[in-house]
Length: 106
Image 1 (tube, rainbow, N blue to C red):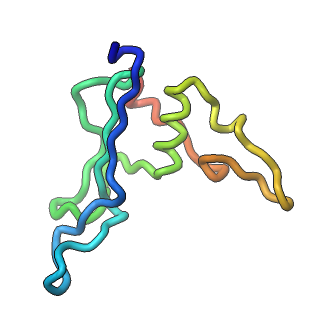
Image 2 (image 1 turned 90 degrees about the vertical axis):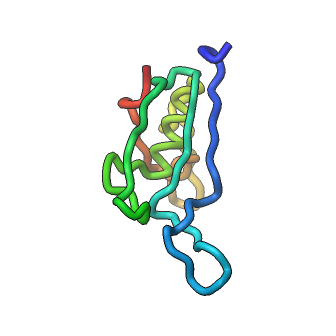
């Protein structure tokens, strides 16, 4: 069943490796974890890495638009064909950006 099912997990943001004040760690948009399993994704490996403090991505960085383009590809949709024009500007789910991350595909 996992062969035909794409499982995705992710949080809102990562967390900084340090705290400011006594309220816990801050949101971190520079380095965070998401994962996918099944549905055409290679199993048993990691893609990308943060610096030694977990503060920001330094290896195989993936923009959120790339991640969305990859998800749509795995679902059988070409994100570039989802473009529509409004008020003189092109729009799509990947904000007219995004490349499919072929290194994570089976």
